[in-house]
Amino acid sequence: MFNTLSDRLTGVLQNLRGKGRLSEADIDATAREIRVALLEADVALPVVRTFIAKVKERAKGSEVSQALNPAQQVVKIVNEELVGILGGETRRLNLAKNPPSVIMLAGLQGAGKTTLAGKLAKWLRGQGHTPILVACDLQRPNAVTQLQVVGERAGVKVFAPEPGNGVGDPVDVARRGIEEARRSQHDVVVVDTAGRLGVDEEMMRQAADIRAAVQPDEVLFVVDAMIGQDAVNTATAFRDGVGFTGVVLTKLDGDARGGAALSVREVTGQPILFASNGEKLEDFDVFHPDRMASRILG
Ligand code: GDP
Image 1 (cartoon, rainbow, N blue to C red):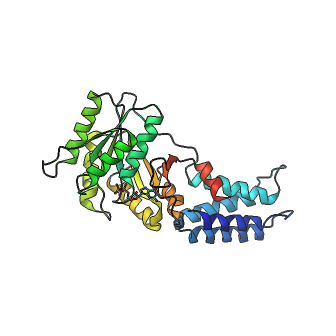
Image 2 (cartoon, rainbow, N blue to C red; image 1 turned 30 degrees about the vertical axis):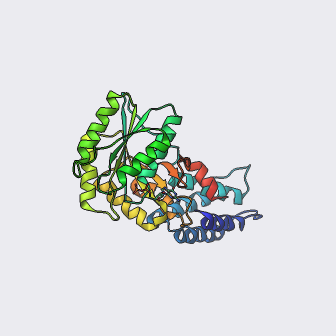
Image 3 (cartoon, helix red, strand yellow; image 1 turned 90 degrees about the horizontal axis):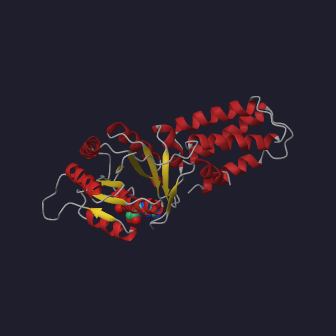
């Protein structure tokens, strides 16, 4: 995903190599090139502005290290600031002291929520948990079946409304799913919710109602990193309409420019918890800001 950005940034930083000291003009020129590279990668403008201002200030400031030459120092600053916009520390999943914990997934249709439910369930099992999936996407005709398939692959139970009872109420299904978890001793409940193709009031209200009814320990906003700048707009709409406690980036295996991934944390103020990079259940991991920054800087 970050190939072009990565090439550009490493190229810019390589130009500094061999310079004994950096003049203000050198730093300004480097900052300008980094700015262009980030904008071309679709990073949101306010994020780019803050990033560049910090890099410039630190590079011109008094951060003198005996161990690093000027070029290495700029690389270190850029790396640290990248880690910063990606969230700094790795943020762990917040689970309840008294199980079951409830994790609600929200996001647009096609973002990868249902797939994520399976990935998360498998990952949670690997961590020693006993997750159950709850199918509250009652809008899309195949969503319940799709979750059942994913659950079977992940080896976890799926709670779904009985067929043939009309559309059903997702809030009621969520509540009953949690009761079922309590009854059958599952310690984490993953609630899949309905998305639409675009941001939509009805969808937001439904997700907000589920959130209010079940008070999840985490609400994860699932976003397709391939949708570029739109990811930031969608994230803002979900933040205001439903609210969320963390972000999951999906489709990081795609060839989009990746700016969404670099913007969403700064723009929404919420941390990125997980990243998906493929369609298979194992194409998934905890998101580590420092590792992502290192990958980008090559
Ligand atoms: P939902 O509508 O949000 O539940 O989205 P789905 O889970 O149905 O995913 C939509 C499509 O994206 C499916 O074809 C998935 O296989 C695919 N998908 C999900 N996550 C990823 C990912 O990380 N990488 C790729 N390449 N495809 C993904």
